[in-house]
Image 1 (spheres, rainbow over the protein chains, first blue to last red):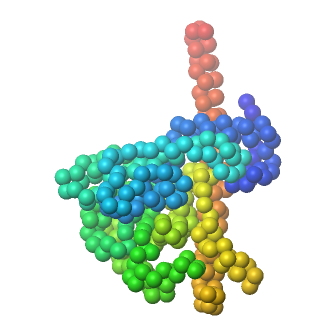
Image 2 (image 1 turned 180 degrees about the vertical axis):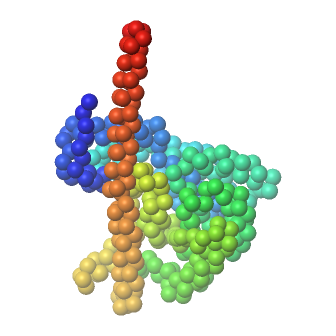
Image 3 (image 1 turned 120 degrees about the horizontal axis):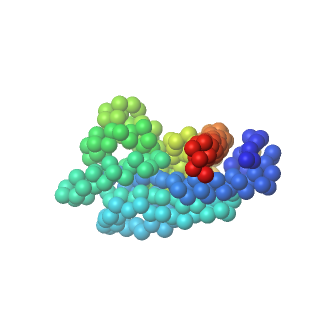
Length: 262
Length: 64
């Protein structure tokens, strides 16, 4: 029996120090076996129209179908997305990411009990759950009701507040790709309000991340919260699949300008 | 139109914030990987011990 003696290998780095080629191969095979049997899994839930599929597409460069007019996700689906590991010793190895993409709650009163039952059935498989809300939707009672029915998953939920680019007065600063000062104040107010409403149900102040898929704003923060909320022994694998940098969304000339000034 | 000082400092703040978040998550990755590796290694060792035990028991009872 061969015993691995890793000298602090870093899965994010191509430099893996003390591991021999044979060790690396063993780690890669173990990753294939382990994550083949139980792939990293994210559940995305929330009220209809909050941009669940778009958020997944933005973070993992996937192509889930989206629509701006109708509820697009009609079925409860576990989507097995074939991806490649993007860094570390297993770089370029294939891996599956499973996204449990659920129909939006609240779109049809007849379907909600069915959806809730399916959530209860499928969410235990998830490493982490992304609960999305839309910034312009002030009514939080639907989210509160559904959260009340999913109490056993509260510790695994990361809350995201999407569509902050259309918060009043909608004067997003395109030149720096950031909300205007007034929008920023309004966003902070909305985050405070929604956080309090969620806290009433889950018994703690949630970590609610305001973000915008269409602007790429705070996606890094949202993604990192997903990583830090995943089970301890599986956090790293999500990071190996991350396919964007926050710098992608800052206009190049602005980045250059900042560098020059620094 | 050139950026104002306020805009520059807001971009700087946002960049610093997101970089902080990235590093914070990255710090958790190494222990996460080692924990996973330890779990896989332990599972391997336990499986081998059980295999050895099963073979020994079978041999003791003359089954093999």
